[in-house]
Length: 295
Image 1 (cartoon, rainbow, N blue to C red):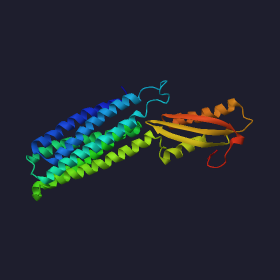
Image 2: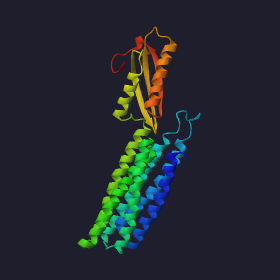
Image 3: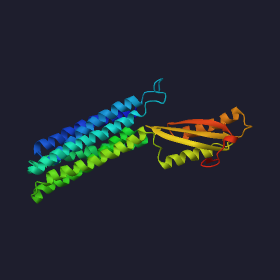
Image 4: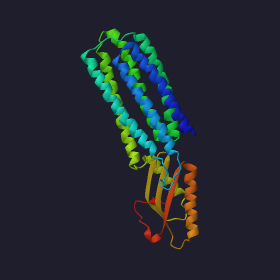
C-alpha cells in the first residue's frame, strides 16, 4: 500500500476517534453547538472512507476501458465530500432552529470543553499532515479532506470560545447561535470543494503558474523546431496531461524530429512529475506565428 493510501487509512482511524470524543462532549453537556461539531465529524468519517475508496480506484493502472487511467476517481470523492458537508449543514441548522425555540444552559461545561478540545487538537495536527501530503502527492482527495478538516478545526475553536461565553454572559441562546454559524461556515467549505472538484472533472486548465512552467519547458528544450502551438493541458488527479503541435523545418528527417520530441519528454519527466506529453509534429507550412510558444 502506497503512502497516499496509508494517509487515507489514518484519516479514517482518526476520524472515528475524534467522532467518539465529540459525541461524548455532546452527551455530557447537551450543547447544540457541540452536537453540530459531532455531526460534522460523522461527515469527516464518511468523507475519509470515500477518499480511501477513491484513492484505491485511482491507483489502478490504465486498462482497455480506461486508457487514460482512473485518476479522476479522486475528484468524485471530493464532490461527494462537498455534498455530505451540505447535508451536515442542513442538519445542524435544523438543530440550531429548535435550540433557538428552547435555549438551555449546557451541563458539565468543563468536561465538554476538555473532550472537544482534545478532539480539536487531534484534528489540527492531522489537518497539517493532510494538506502537506496532499499537495506534495498531487492528490485532490487528500487536499479536499485537509481543507474540510481545517474548516472543522476553525469552527471547533469558535464553538469552544463561545462555549466559555455562555455561562459568563448568562445567554443560553449563544449555544444555538454558534451552531448556526458553524453550519454556514461548513456550507461555504462544501461549496468550495464541489466547485474545485467539478473543475477537475470538466478538464479545467491547471493554474497559470503551471501553464507558464509548461510553456517554459517546451520553449527551452525544443531547439531545432520552429514553433509550438495549440498547447492544451489539464489535470486528472496527480497526472498532468500536456499536448501541443510542434512545427519543424520541412527538410528535417523524421528521426531528427523524433529526437526533439524525446528531448522535450525527458525534460518533463525530470522537472514535472506525473506528466504525460503528446506531441503532434507538423511541417513549417503549418506554422501559425500567432499565439504560439516562441522557440
